[in-house]
Image 1 (tube, rainbow, N blue to C red):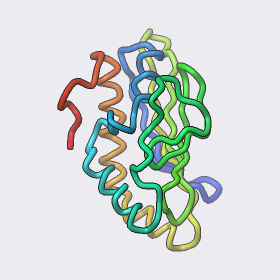
Image 2: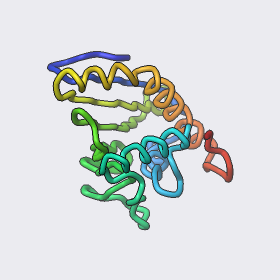
Image 3: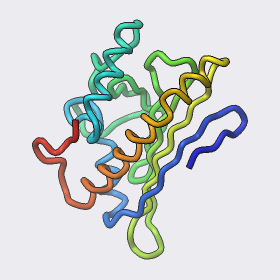
Image 4: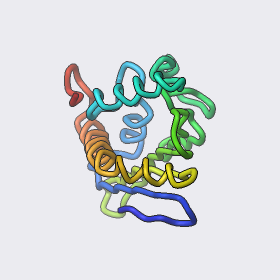
Length: 168
């Protein structure tokens, strides 16, 4: 689903997952650093390389070595802005962008016993170039975010990322 509300561009994906909220939460809070982003890692690294060229943080920061993340921690070119154990993680983009961006994961128990996973990308464009940027990469985001939510769901359902299971 894609909507524009109050100048904010919002892309949302929802999946029913046959795993507990805790397992799904553990999967999406393990993203970044050496684990990577589970889907099309090469494109995430390309974005990091492009960010480095324009003076952004790129992938130089990785992620904290500890298992439990905290507000303010850096994860690649993101900063943790909000976190609720077994429920939600919101990452604020620190890469160079013509606007401000966030990536949010949420999980809740569904009535049928499965879990409902929601991945939402928010973008507040700065000026016309911000809109041009977002719409220019719209289909790329669609590919990446669809693949990312599907891989988070699959890893949560089947237990581990495993060696070589990330798509490149």
